View (cartoon, rainbow, N blue to C red):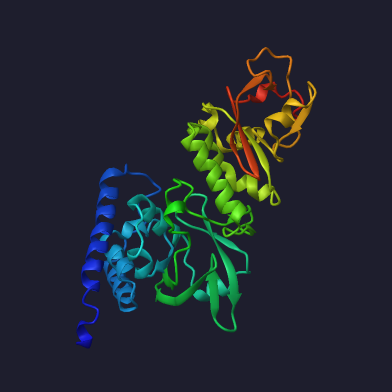
Length: 353
């Protein structure tokens, strides 16, 4: 009977593998070819088979299956490190296919990192993943005890696979939350740490101000029809938070149409910063300010300006743009005012450029 005690695992793994296979096949069929997804080197069947066999022997059946079915999902660069997720973390949750795909890419780095390489990294160092602008951080190192944590998750099975250009380690849990209320927040669901341009940890992904408040802001902006501005904010948020480590409260002026979302990244970042004040200001607070009062923004040397003399319905405008929907979103830390259109760079005469 002992040999049959886990008979029920078979259908669970079969179903999970079928779902993953569907993701892999549909991704291959529906995704246009691009340099970002096309493997830069052929993957040896021998390597894939050996890696899959080792993963399966260690209890990582789902990752083993996907590695065989869709190796191109992982091996898109000359070097690769995979942090394999335990079966129990994936089987016992209900997550949509698009998030599972992003999660697996977030568990993959375009670098080969053995555990010796990880131990050589200083605590708080970051390294890239296959998810754009989302990095992993070394949050704990104990070389004497041979222990390491990535994003506060223990590397439980180090060096399961070590090939010339490939390393695979097993981890105790996913690097990002699988809770449904976090997963269904959209593109910001991967809860990554904030790292600076030197690949050093700035803010922990477990910091509720980072994970919850900003994720909530972006999600709520999207649900209130400020989608283009939400996309722009999301794409530059990491760099903003890296520059403003102690940013605890903000005021955001959100336009319904944000044509600058298609601008180059440096320009987009500047324009997004112009729409954010580093303090919480209610509509009453703003209305109490005198005409021509300047408002400091997150863009250095560029202020907004109260323009009460403009003929607007609400009687209050910023740089000539009406606040048409005051306080559409509000919490203790942030507040969002809807404006009729985006602020334009040309209207900032005090810019020191």
